Image (cartoon, rainbow, N blue to C red; front, side, top):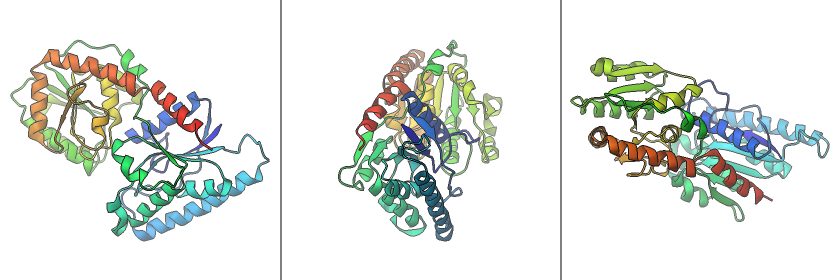
Length: 367
């Protein structure tokens, strides 16, 4: 089957590392693994942030013109032509980055419409977010199949689906093999605390603030920290970490292929996860055998099992976060237990092979 993959938020080849980019790349691999041919349309994207109503309307008008071009090009091809796509597949759709194209194109061409990772929040129906919110509702009303990645999105999505449309849970996934094949390093002395995250404003920076506060409460414990990532908020993150001197090392942005070895060299993975949807890096860390300390936010509990593969703490609470880290710093055997369980759990529930089986079954039920 020829699948048109639309990524309103970030394309798979985007130069900036992020969980969204890695998920988009994973979907391409997944669809190809199932024997489908993947194509991508010319993107129609919104700038960062919540657009003004005028900017939103301008982008929507551009999208309508783009949809018309796609429809005309498809119809000009003879029936059975290899360039006629059979399925529209949109990854990530929410009020800031809705899918304007999918509902228009699929309705005109009478082809199935699938969305993965869409969120619907009633509180976005008013104010500057209302236009994007309505676009999400139009997409949900047109969808034949919605694949829900974050369990917290289930209820909101279900309420907006038309009769006959299906919703299927698809747990977040990664290719586990590179992380489980990375040669593990003996426990460090002092233990290495690892964080892999972009350094940008808003939620990411808030998470770094909680992390810095927690580390300050652990000054008398033995540890070293490695921060992997970069971005416009790096100067502020460096200011937050300055009191720790050489105990905190900034690695900057690193190629994704180098991450398995970095995870394997650490002892504990930390991220406060302010407003995190679920966090691909949590899966990567656990696949490499790292126990996790995280904030209980969004769908994080769906990828980190509290007390099984890591410890979850109240969101935005540096005292509780520090307490969880301190407990694991003092208990190497517990870290080893959690790390082993993390490897097994990710392999069993979040590997691409598992996701491929779920996706194949879901797509097989399309009209």
